[in-house]
Length: 186
Ligand code: PRP
Image (cartoon, rainbow, N blue to C red; front, top):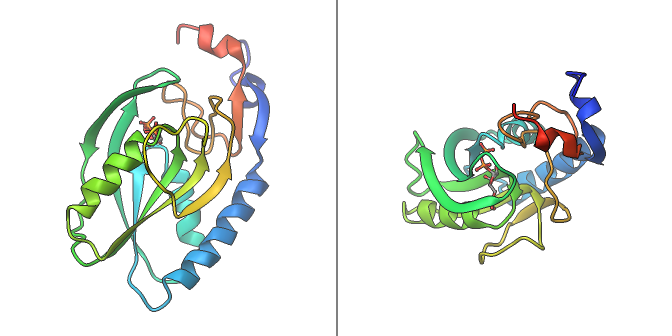
């Protein structure tokens, strides 16, 4: 791949920056309404959710708090390994708090199924899930997202926080990669 420009390495734009922003703004309005008069802690799942967390938080008009967890279910490939590892726990005590998990993607559901149960065991007031993307055809676990941005087909996507081998997270849109990228060594 000669060019370093990410745009030259994608095959198809799946969701534009504008589509993503409009959808997050719409869902933020709903969240503001649903949590009116109530405390709200956003829990972002590192690393993929950094972009969606930053945009969702700034579209909300109510005062919220943010914390982060890292739980990895992927290796460096393009399919789920089936193993969840905690890489970073919350700094916040969530007992009696309203928690909204913020995710970039609900794929097999392994991460969110595990994470929701883990947070529920800490006696919060409530735990809900917001995911920007959901792959209904890939879902293997019984996990329900309360707020969903877009349902997408079961194909590997990158951008807006989503990576391939830790790269492409900084693309503003969501896209599929050129097959040549997967055949390269680094
Ligand atoms: C991705 C994504 C979700 C999870 C979804 O994270 O951000 O957390 O996989 O997949 P699942 O529904 O099959 O569990 P990943 O483990 O790749 O880490 P990252 O956020 O650092 O990219």
